[in-house]
Amino acid sequence: MLKSEIMTSIIRVANPITPIDPTIPITEPEDTSGITILYPEDYGCGANGNTPAEEISYWADLLADAEDGNRIQCANGAVYNLVADTEPLINFDKALDIRATGATWLVGAFAQRGIRLVGADIRWTGGTISGSSEGYANEQTWRPFYVEADRVQIQNLAMINTAIGVNVQKSNAVSVSNCTFTNSTLRQGLGTYFYSAAVKLLGCTNSSVNSCTSSGFGQAILVGAKDGVPAADLVISRVSSYDTADNGIYISSGDRVKVTDCDITRFNSTGIKTDGNYHEVRNNTVRTKRETDDESLELENRTAIIVSGDGTPEEGIWNGEGTIVDSNTVYGNFFRGVYFAVRTGGYHRNAIVTNNTLTTTCTTAGRSPVVYSHESIEATTTYENNTESGW
Image 1 (cartoon, rainbow, N blue to C red):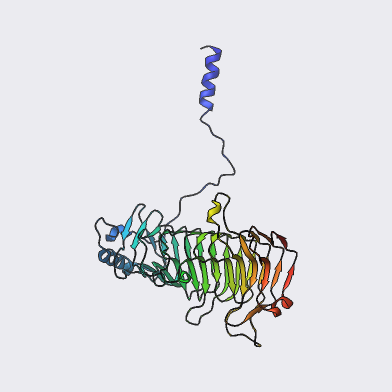
Image 2: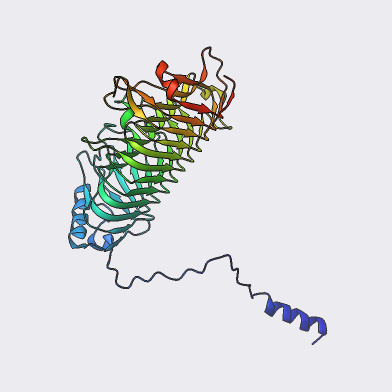
């Protein structure tokens, strides 16, 4: 053998050996010993031709067998048909780990409570909830993914063409993360936009929405009270909101809600609206269009951030206190940057508005980076170190 042939042979042997990259973690197969796994397909769920009534019946059989701590493993590519003109309901009422990646629930236009998580200690991962491209019957009651449970994790879920996305009520320690909500069916004149939202947190405490994307709802996130139960101690972070018919993020009442690192783009009313006490609005971007949008999409006279109170005024005038608006970037066609509004006859005091960049392209006379709806508000507000342009 020639020397060149010997060297080529050596090289050919050496080439398949790939060095170990220390930056790539080595993942071990999951140890499922001790975990009881239930498979919906074993019960007839997702079978071709299932009616909604049959689908619900098969799920009921599975859930009757399930116990706390069990895992439900949906098949990749499974389709569960809940399209009906009544109220189909799958009731997850135990401490379950639901793995739904690759599975789809068809809920149509009338599913008022298609999937319901109740109880405590539930985890839901993946899957798609698909509504109707024809629209839906009622924005207020249509809620195909409903939660009334404590210590719930919902992650990597996609919802398409639903009036409401994840609807959480009177719950504690609920986390919604890495979810995508897309609605192309919001119809002008149908009810009120107040009821349509990608995520609702009503009467919830110690809960969060993180790293989610919303497009086409009345608002991306709606926070408020429910049956007299207030919302408190919530975190909304890294939410991307596009094309809302009303507000981007709306805190209609509550205490100590943090809104941080969100991107709010294209809305008809207000980017971030806060009613209540001691909220924190920090490091958000609020804009009326993206760089790729046509100028014709612009609307006049919108407001970037609203701060107001909630409830019965105290001392004759005040019903909100202590909200912080710090280090936000506002740019676009805004008539008002930060607006202190009246709410139920009262106003917000002792707010802090600092280190914000407020830029407008609006040319309407009377535009202002900050507006106080009552002369007494300005005296209690700290407004400093803000950069203003175009006002």
